[in-house]
Amino acid sequence: DGGITQSPKYLFRKEGQNVTLSCEQNLNHDAMYWYRQDPGQGLRLIYYSQIVNDFQKGDIAEGYSVSREKKESFPLTVTSAQKNPTAFYLCASRESVGLSYGYTFGSGTRLTVV
Amino acid sequence: AQTVTQSQPEMSVQEAETVTLSCTYDTSESDYYLFWYKQPPSRQMILVIRQEAYKQQNATENRFSVNFQKAAKSFSLKISDSQLGDAAMYFCAYMWRGATNKLIFGTGTLLAVQP
Image 1 (cartoon, each protein chain N blue to C red):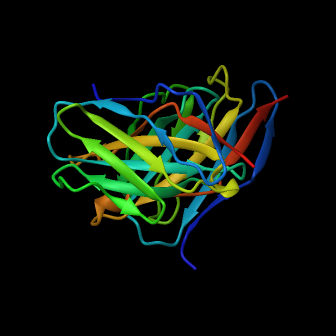
Image 2: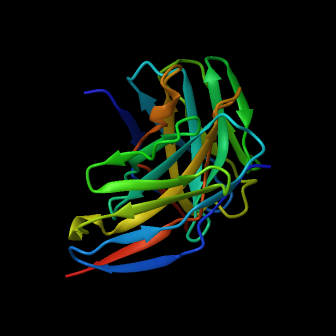
Image 3: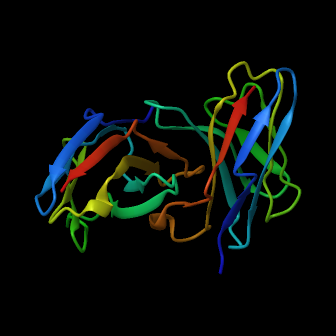
């Protein structure tokens, strides 16, 4: 079955550490997105990529980095510069046509700073 | 800037009754899509219903329907015959049919269904 796989489901980070969240899709979608979800704030866009080897900052990119070396993969690194990284992170993808179908989402990663 | 507003942080409905969740948005564009997503306790985002702005007819999916008022920039979701499984966080979202196709979300409405 096609879909988006995010791993790990739960991740714990110590202060000052960088951590990488994985997002893999086998839907052959060109565009991929990372969102952060905090209570009472909905989903906010961190980074997005519309094609391999290209990506753009979203609304809250500070303290995060991404890469898009393969169409299937869009990992997100939470760096030590991100002051408040504890949140739920969702990855999504979108096909090039059929925009009315919106995004397909992964099941998310819960990141906690310890 | 495009924004989406959900003014009801929490709602409650009795099982088998009908409930309406509100959503307003702000945009200067004319070609866009609107969506309602459901996020149950599992936190998986599930597409409930979608509306294309150029279509005047309101979208319907089984027990779910929308009231799309383009001039008022309003996009409410009506859930009929509410079921316990409808209990979830509901997000309204907007996507401009432009270069980036970014989804912009509201802050969500937490729906409780009382047996």
